[in-house]
Structures are given as structure tokens and as C-alpha cells.
Image (cartoon, rainbow over the protein chains, first blue to last red):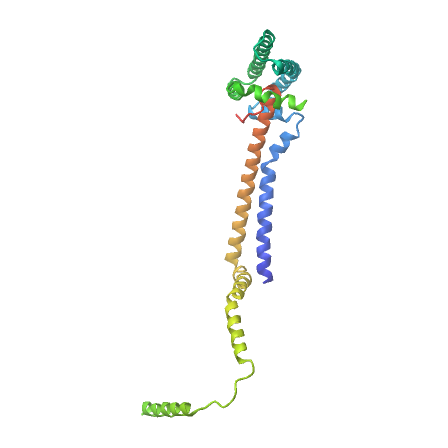
Length: 161
Length: 115
């Protein structure tokens, strides 16, 4: 009885050790990524096979782009607030509402243009093949569903402020 | 000759049995004890499952071939599930970091996927 129970227990222990070892060594890269100061940029380096020099350059461009993006987002939030106030009391279309909508559309276009410029500059920093793949990826996930942009805007950015 | 003798014995035994009269009274609570034995007999299959398991552990598992097969199967299960779960974790993280990168450069869009 004792020998049989020991064999059963040994099987469970062997299985647990095998699972833990394969999981641990299989996720070494994950943990390494998450230990980086900016895991999303470290992921970019891994995903698009960037050299250290390319990664450094892209990190600098990323850091330079973020404050401009933040500033535009604050302007968008302000415009949204103004439009909301106008719409709260309006019963017909007024010149103020038309102006607010036009300004909002201009700012949105400006934001998208700057974003596209940034993506193009980043892609040019990558090796040619990876740059094409990067552009395809961002275009697919950012510009292919523009109708959702406004809905996501508040959740994605201003929700964090 | 032998057969004839045997036949005579059977006949005499039959006669004796027919003449036999039970004069002893039944023991006290005879009926109750009979039903108790029937009930106990009905519960025996359950006990035999435990007996079967005990036999499995004491006799079957310690056999070298069975023990080796059992441990090998559990080893393979551990390896496969560990590798599979690690791969799932890697995919989840890739997807999450891709989304984080897109969100960091595109305030309009929260959702993104791995390339």
C-alpha cells in the first residue's frame, strides 16, 4: 500500500515540477520585457527586430512625440466640453455650434496628420521590411476604424487624467 | 456393482431425510437476523470498490511497467500543459503590449491587436 501511494505521489510531483519548469522557462522573455522601463517600446523592439541603435532612435522620437500628443488631447477635451455646453441648450443649429464642429474636425485632422507623420518617421528608422510591416500594422489598427475614434478617445486618454 | 451400491445408499439417505423432523425451535430474533444479513449483502458491492482501489494501489501500481507508464504520462502532461500555458501567456502579453504602444501614440483608440 505504502509503495503504491508513494508512486502515485511521485507522479503528481513529477507532473507539477514539469509544468512549473516549462512555464517558468517559457515565460522568461515575458518577464524580461516587463522589467524594462517602457515595456511597450521593448515589445516594439522585439516585435520588429530592431537593433540597439534603431531602438534608441525610436525611443527618442517616441519621447519627443508624447508631449505634443498630450497637448492636442487637452485641446480636444476643451473643444468637446465647449461643444457639449452649446448642445445642452440648443434646439436648432447655430453658427457657434457650426464653428465648434468645424474647429473640432480641424483639430482631429491635425492630430491624425501628426500621428501619421510620427508613424512614417518611425517606420523609416526601421529596416525596410520591418518598416513596411509596422506601417501596415498601425494603419490596420488605427486608421481602418476611424468611426470608433471619438468613442475611444475619452476612455483611452482622458480617462487616465 | 459399485453403481448398485451407491443407488442403495441414496435411497436410504432419502428415506432418512424424509423421516427427519426438526424438533428444535428457531433461535430468538431469527427473522430479524436473516433480514440483517440480506441488507449487509446488498451493501457489499460498495465496499468492494474500495477493496478494488486498495488492490490497485497495493498490487497493480507498484508493478514496474505500470509505475513507469503512470509517471511518464504525468510527466508528458506536465510538460505539454506547461509549454502550452507559457505560450498562451506570451501571446497575451504580446497583445497587451501592442495595445499599450498604440494607446501611447494614439489617444483616439483604446483597442489594438498584435501585428
